[in-house]
Length: 476
Image (cartoon, rainbow, N blue to C red; front, side):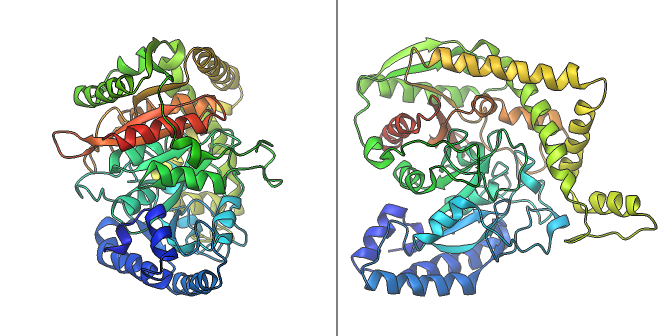
């Protein structure tokens, strides 16, 4: 048995049956990281000593019968999510030596169960990107084909799961940063509804869009994690005070009788690969055979989503990153004036894509342009959300591709920002609407690279999304 290849459910059973210890499971993951991280570059910081200490504590808990679902299970965290006492860079040199004095609420909930932290995972700098080429600690490589990107911005988290360097990962999704790399690496990735999981402790990119969610080997594992991560948090006023469903139980139920919406705009987008579309249609037909009703629907404002997303995201980004000045942490370029110290430190400490988006956002928010760009984009966002509300009065979930294409080559799109931004064309609408979406691997294309299918549900409709996603996953 190769311990590092196990899912959460499999590892839980093995630990409970005393087939192996948490220390042995953790050592297997650490050995895999040691073998592969120089090539894949999925981890920025490996917390080996801490991991083994936590694994020993987990074994003690298990021996005493104090077992919860994640006790003794090794995991990794995107480096744009804070873990108390652990170096947290956001993949940018301006925070190169930053040790977080506080911790994301969802990470605290996971660690309280006795999960074992393996380290912090590489990502696009401050979550800016769709390829994980924008990290100041080097690009992450797709473990399926190391000449290809893993997707972004949670590329290190997706690659680590796909390469079995950890049992699961926790990532962040603003405009597709969990789902898109999950698709390109062939793993499961979930973006919960905005407000379902606490955002406290995430390095903010766009505060009205950011969410934290799981990257896993199975849909069953994603459901298990959502039960632990979800819930109201007094530290995040945007979290919903709501009952947390039994996602695991619901995900195992039959899908017969559900109405599946096929949004025509998602299948007529320019640049969507023919082979990807065919694979999605095959899975839609499979759902029909399982007793689902398939309905073609329309989301007419989808065509404006990518433009609205980049206006709103860059605007909030410009504001959020104004707090980083290079004075206390990381790169500091001392100059003759305070202004020059700030400007030079930020120039040296931020990746190029971060600087590009800060400048875009600052321009959009400037006098004379706010009405023309930011306010108009907010109106479009409302129309997109209304489209989803209308459609979800007719169907239970929507099905589409996650990414319009399989993983592309490292460097292939890096000199063409607009082409790179279009990688988010199928994932950004759900982000703008604040609704849950799940990427499920549905096999590989003729080039041997994974294809991801996206299941989108109504706000707080994670249960049905996981139910349909699990059915798709189990019928591959």
